Length: 184
Image 1 (tube, one colour):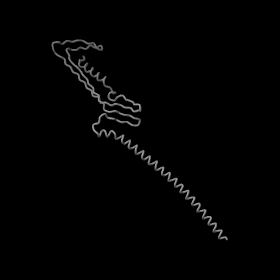
Image 2: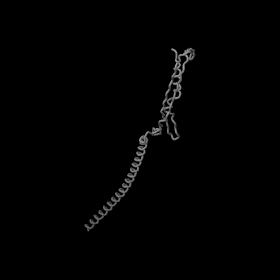
Image 3: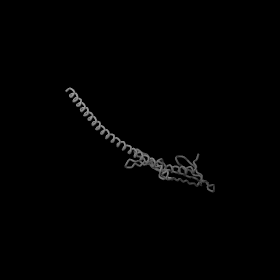
Image 4: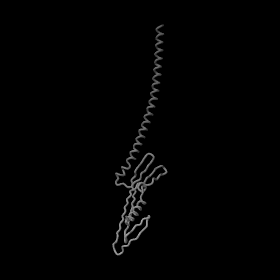
């Protein structure tokens, strides 16, 4: 089975596209910053190709032989054809990876709402951190107040115990005095 010239044009166009596009075109090479943040570009890739040709019937219909890869291929001339390919690469977003966080940062926003929704996770995290700090501060204040109250209460308890001891001594001494008075 002989190869038609259009097949060669299509093969060339497809190989050219294959050389231009690989996985790293869509998901780019990771970029690591000095503060351990990794940024991965994400792109939208569109490509297309076209090939066409025509055999002309006319006065000159010659045949020739071409030796390629040890095969003998016959072409009928004249043949006219062409092929073309095109690729567009548009950046879509960046994937930002931090030690405890992953964000998808789109390049363009279609509305203000999209932009706001992108910042909601950050807002929630910051709000959560702020609330945790407030609760922690309140807890520390409460513990401090409780310790002070315990100190005061322990001082008050010691004072009351001492007063009770004094009163007991006083009562005991009065009791003894009365007993001594009764014996006289």
